[in-house]
Image (tube, rainbow, N blue to C red):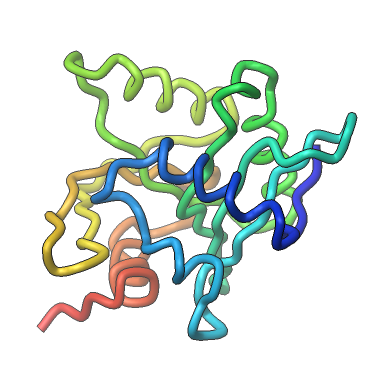
Length: 175
C-alpha cells in the first residue's frame, strides 16, 4: 500500500468512494478537494494497492506545524477488511508528526461508530476528552458533534486543535 497523487482518470472512482463513505454534513464539496483554490487546502492522496497499483481508497490531509489533520480517510468497500486503512495510517504516521482526526461519537443506534473508534484505537489513536463540534461545510448544513482522536494526546491541546481546525479547515471565525 502506498499513498500518491491521483491520476485524472482515477478521480471518478475516488469521488464515488468519498460520496458513499461520508454523509453530506461531513463532506467538503468535491470540487474543493480535487481543485483546491488555496495552497493551504487539503491534500488529496490515493491509497494504492501495491500488488497492482489500483486505487483502493483516498485520504485528505492538512499539514500544520504541530500535527497532520486527517480530514477524510475512506477505503473502497470492495477493499475493506484487508488492512488497507491501517497501512494508510502507518504511512501517514511516518511523517513524524502526531496525527489528528475527527470521529463520530459511539452510538448504540449505529454500531459502525464503535467499530471505527476501535479501529483508530488499534492504530495508535486516543480519544481526547473535549466537547468538539465540527462547523458546517456550507450554511445549509448543520454543526456536527464529533470527537477528536490523536496519536499523541499528551503533546497536543484539544482546544488549540479545535480552534485551528475551525479557522483553517472550516473557515469559521468565532466572533
